[in-house]
Length: 197
Image (cartoon, rainbow, N blue to C red; front, side, top):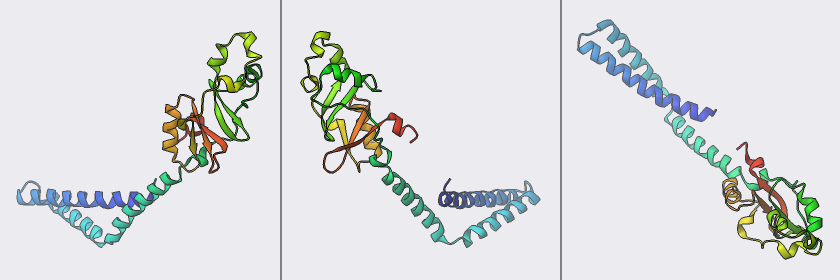
């Protein structure tokens, strides 16, 4: 799918194939196995070598450099901000667990980020809510049972998608939040956003 890589592979294959033809031709001619076949193999090998010889050497070098450069550029372009989604469920720290439960029903994960004014305050695990007695849910606030913020819960905008994927696979949330230079939450990444990579 790359013109440069195809050109490079064609040149390399042509060199090996032409040398093989020359060797086969010489073996047939010198060994008296098949004089006519040896002659044609030798001729074809020399003609192909002549064509390869006429190819500017910088073409092979340029193809190699361009392949590496384009690969690096594509890899560099794959950063968190290009794949993040801004459509995610969150709750504020000052609501009761009963109120949070209504939001939890819309959540696709077993955890919900606790965010206020775009700042990440913690993470609420739905399992922690379920452990509370029903009578306590109306008097317990989210900030009382949420887990503290950890570095593995978020990534920056310009982090590579590979590093972001490693974080979301290892942080136990099923997603990773994306923050900007002011530490404000502006999106999140889950397996859904990067499934096509």
